[in-house]
Image (cartoon, rainbow, N blue to C red; front, top):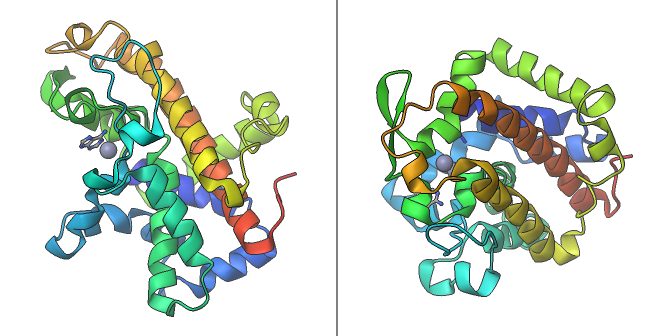
Length: 273
Ligand code: ADE
Ligand code: ZN
Ligand code: ZN
């Protein structure tokens, strides 16, 4: 995701933190750094030479190409030889943040990765190999050239909600929170379907469940008619209208699950209901 997605995931999660979690998170932020700023750090880091090793940690590439059978397969798609993937990275960072033999700076970095990866693992194209997660698929968006990945990361959401200003992020977060608590997402979320997989001792299993859920959207919507269905096409109309609902719900799930994850690892219990 872009700034809008990641910052909203983090702010939404903070609305569901237990007091102990909020306290814990605060300890690992720099002075004056918001949780929203911390959540976007990992993308900047992956693009500087020092952090380049972490680039493959932002996605898991399901290899069925073009995607027909939608499935994420850990052994196939998360090879150590590729530098690992978002699932192994989330597992590792979840254990590092809890390792009190590590210095503060390393645990703080683990937190920044977790805040970011639980967002990215919900972006359908971060779970798909096809043309580098759509980065190589050229499309048109409101008459401008773009690639499929970038419109799913940010352009569709921003054309729907405007620039990711602080006001915009707060208002989007408020919307998602009310959909979770009394609206459209309530039955799915509160039956604890969204929070079901919160066992940080089986972090890998949970992360794979989340990645598979996101990957299902690739077959069901993102590349429903194959690469030919989107390549060179104008996607600012009907396609974007249908995508907005998927993107917003994915961001809501990510925020809600991030909260459950953090509550679980700080307190040892599921603090979502
Ligand atoms: N590079 C290679 N695969 C990718 C993906 N799924 N998402 C983002 N960048 C990638
Ligand atoms: Zn992306
Ligand atoms: Zn990322």
